[in-house]
Image: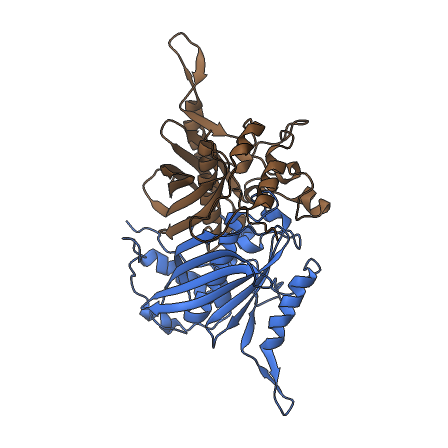
Length: 260
Length: 260
């Protein structure tokens, strides 16, 4: 019996913006889970194919890019956004504008509809599905964040403003919400660097609570790659970097042989 | 400079139902973080006191208990709920009904308003704050779950139905949402066993994806206690237990000397 064991990272959303050639799929192999005896089987690969070979997302109309500023963003959030955004484009001596070291990564709130005939969901459920980190319509209530990538330094930085619906301990962000933003940022980083990847392990040390409503930085750093394994470390700090809130390591498994 | 380093677990919500005597607070000590050099300082303790000594939650009106069945629950979710709920009360030979081995733990969607004058939040934000796992009003769209505790066996079981707003990989639950339910269930378990505790570490191995809309079981098992450290292991399995989706370990730090 075929069993569905694929874990495509949420970061695949970002990857949808990239061009995929069908030739890549020749390199798909069965891959052993690094920490156990699980295998990603044919049905999993069919699932990937269904997603990655579907029409480009949002081709007919322009969807909302959630990584752009909105009125809920605090002055600190805007300041940090500008700090990194200004480095996405630099001016040469001749006055030309060229791409800088940093790139802002767009972010949308859905993905599933581009996997035709979703294997597990009814059409109704499929139509209503939303990315977990972008599932709240009210601006500023949930996860407000933007991710910037620096390919040269193999790092990503996420500016994250935690809304009032992310409460855990009184007045602070829920440990699960912190795990969620860490998974999202490191998953995005792994996918941008190596193509579609799956989360295999998250190890999180909670050092200091994050006040609800505050703005923090999520730093993602690519440590090493061993075969298909991508090792990433992550720190969540206060916006000025003086306080360490959370430390984490993440292990992702690349789904394809080819690196992009 | 006093720094706010307390991490009270989300499970404190459950603990609010228990009676606290002020004498307990005499036992509060500065506690070193088990994995680093962080300390929980006086300001943290003030924060706990503000919360735990506040009026009993929901004393004036009966709030919604989110752990009770609603129309969005699937037949599988209801079946599993009944399976454990029926064991919460047993009939003696004489026909009397007495408490069984299992206890259903109630669950609410707010907590913060009982921490007077929230240190970090404006009153508006404070009034709007909601527990992360209960922040979606639409029934069935987010986290639908109920936790049962077995004090004798030192275990908890959570029946969890993942709604369509928890999407991560196409058609599957987001890794962060899985981390969230694990943090919530193990945190509830730690708090029910030992009183208020904080999450210090979560280590999660993702083995097999969880289809969106499906019902799974989250098993929490108390492994050992060393001083104030509470070690819990956790497995997320399919509803019939045949498939392992996720494995995790969690470390919590008890905030008070006394065990309840």
